[in-house]
Amino acid sequence: MSLALGVLPWLVSAWLFAVGLYGIVRSRHYVHLIACLAVCQSATYVLLLSIGFRWHAGPPIFYDHPPGSAAVDPVMQALVLTDIVVGAAVSALLLAIALQVHKRRGSVDPQSLRPLRPNR
Amino acid sequence: MSPGLRSLLLLLALALLAPFAWHVAKALPQFGSPTAAYGATVNALGPPLRHVSNMVAAVNFDFRALDTLGEESMLFCAVTGAVVLLRGTRGEGTTQRAGLIPGRAVLARSDAQVLVCRIACTLTMLFGLYMVLHGTVTPGGGFQGGVIIASAVLLLYLAEGYGPWRRLIRSPLLDVLESLGVLLFVGAGAAPLLSGHAAMSNLMPLGHFRDLFSGGVMLVTNFAVGLAVAAGFVMLLLEFLEETRALQSDSLPDEAQR
Image (cartoon, rainbow over all chains, first blue to last red; front, side, top):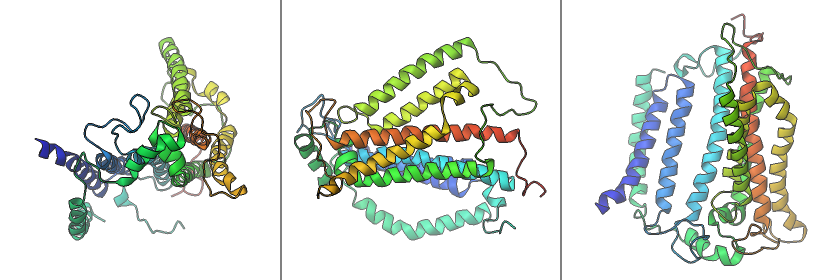
């Protein structure tokens, strides 16, 4: 039981990353591709939070429980926190690019677009 | 490139990377017992050294503030890039009228929607401000609070409709607020240099533990991040909503004849 629980977070993280990567590779639509990238990113959240987790420990916020009591790793939480916000902004940037591609070429299928064609 | 070929390339790349990934996976710490000394040190030294109770904020806004400066620049660049891309083809001109898709009816907002969204907007805005201001004490901080404030602004759009919303939310004001947030962060980091200290050193009075005014320079950097995140996300909302306008006007002149 405890061994299965110890491996589960890594498996969830690997599974999320694999699913997202498969979606990116087989994608036929840029918006779908950006969503798959977000799934890949959530794998990193699970991984980072699992690395910082500690059994029987509270949050790294010493308001309710006194300083010095057991707490999980705050560095990982800080990484995930900034990752989520910056990831959302980068998704917006990618969606803006997809919008421009749709306007210029009339298609958002990566397969029907030639990336290096000069724009006349 | 066909999907089959893409999958083949992926499999090849995975086969190449698999030994290295396995090597890293074997070195992962046991789940539930982290081995990293940095986090434990921050947990032990944060409260006595900085008088703050939120260690995540202490890492973000003081101990690793230089990294957060990088994160904030990334956010700033991503928002700037998205705005430039969207405005680039649309032009600087703005309108306060919502875009219309020909043939689609414009539905009036119901009274219930207006009422619920107005109440929810007020509460969400208050909650966001609370999140930003109490960043060093309780869970929260500039990043989370900024996003909550931006979602309150979106609720305002749902309550008031496009025209009144655009009269309230001005694009130049957002530009100024966003840049001000980044400048404030850089200024708070560079100010200690003037007195011969290292950049990002915490020279302001630290305040009291579990008090709203605790953490010294963290209060400034936390507020700066909140400002930049809130303004940046509202700007993204506004630019994507402006994009609905393009449906009404002409398409790109240089590409239209294709």
